[in-house]
Image (tube, rainbow, N blue to C red):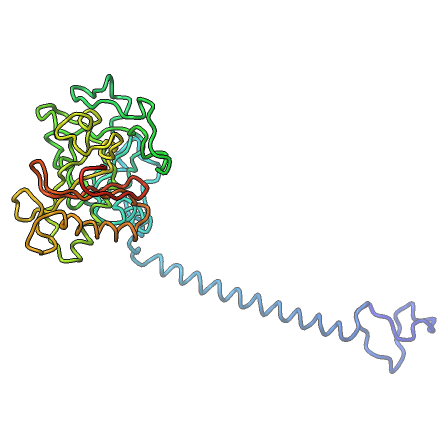
Length: 351
C-alpha cells in the first residue's frame, strides 16, 4: 500500500519491508492534512444521511395522521350550471377569489347591476352562480329586416345611412347596436339593477305590439346607480326615481311623441341615455330636492351636482348631462348619458 520514507535507497523496499523507526504508512497521494479532510467529510456525510432518514420517518408519520383526519372544506366554488350545460366551459369549478372578482366586474362600479346582455355564445356561464343576477341573450342586429324585428317597428340607425358620430367620441359609441333585448309581458319586470327594470327603458310607442325590442348599455345603468348613491349620501330618498325616457328606436326619435330638443344622433337610440327625475310623492313630477319650496330646473341641477361627482370619480363613465325645465306636460328632469366625452347643456337642446 504505502512505501517507507527511504524506499528509494533500500534494495528491499520493492518487497514492502520497513525500516526500524520509520513513520506509519499513509494513503498514496494524500498529505496528512488532506487525509484529515477526507475523514471529516466522511463523518459529515454519514451524519447528514442519518438526519435525512430520521426526518423522512417523522414526515411519513405526520402525513399518515393528516390523511386520517376529516378533509377541510374545498376552496373552490362549484358552478352547478356548468355541470349541466353542454356549451359550458370544461372547467366546472371557479375559485372563490375568481368568482368574487367576476362578481365585482359584473355588478359594475356601483355594485348594483343585476343583469348582463350578450350575443349567443358570449355569456359567461360562471355568472349564473351569482345571486340576483340574470344573463340575457341578445337577438343579433341582423335579425332586423326592413326596419323591423318581427312586428315591432324600429327603423334604421345613422350608421346604416352612412352617418358618423363626432370625432371626439369613442369609435364604438355611434356604431350600430350589437343586438336587441327581447321584452315580453312575462319578463318586462326583470331587474337590471337595484333601482331599474327592463320596462323602465322601453320606447313609449306601439303599446299593443309584443314582443318589444330594447337596446340598453349597462355602463349607463351603472352610472345612474352611482348618481343615485351620491344623491342618497346627500340626504335624498331615491326610491322614487322615474325614467321618463330611456331607449328610443330611431323611428320614434325622429317622429314619435314630442320631438322638440331631440338630437339627430341622440344617445337614446344607442341605449346609453336616460331622462330621469325623483318622484317620491308619486305626483308625476320632480320633487323639491333642494328644499327651496319650488319645483323647477334648480332641482334638476341638484342632480347634476351628483353627475359631476360621479364623472370625477369614474372618468370611464364620462358623458352628457342636460337639465330641462318643466314643459309640455312634464316637470323638470335631467338627461344623463355615457357617450364617452363630456357634454353639458340646459333647456331644449341636446339629448
